[in-house]
Length: 202
Image (cartoon, rainbow, N blue to C red; front, side):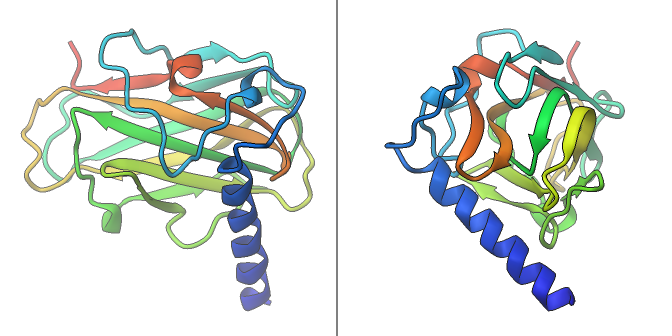
């Protein structure tokens, strides 16, 4: 049973990747008309202000917000948590996201993980490197029955051992895609989202 679940989950995640990297994909939602490969997200915007909540107005999601633990006084090996919550969800079966640090920080992925909120599940630690320093994470609900408002999960990033205490780092959500399946999605770029937090900000 465990092997079967892992195989099904891996197949679903691969389908999501193939869909998001297909420039020919077209849907009827505003956000998803901008094709974007989640493995190569847009660079983090170092000038615009980041917000903790954003209205998206999609077919499958109305808004997205970020919460978490303390984002100040972060030093070497400290844990940084980012929790995503969606509202106005409609039949969600999977989501795909990328968080990118600016300036670049090589988080310790061996000690980091994405913890999906049930009924969402993921594979292994739930995260992988996206580009040089970005972190990609994915959640799947095979029943495709997540509606209304729901927490999607929490990204837990472990600061590297050489992370200087008090260093300010912006963690921007540079890609987000959500929907019932890999072919039915609302997808958003960093410019559309402008969501994120500033670690050790003033």
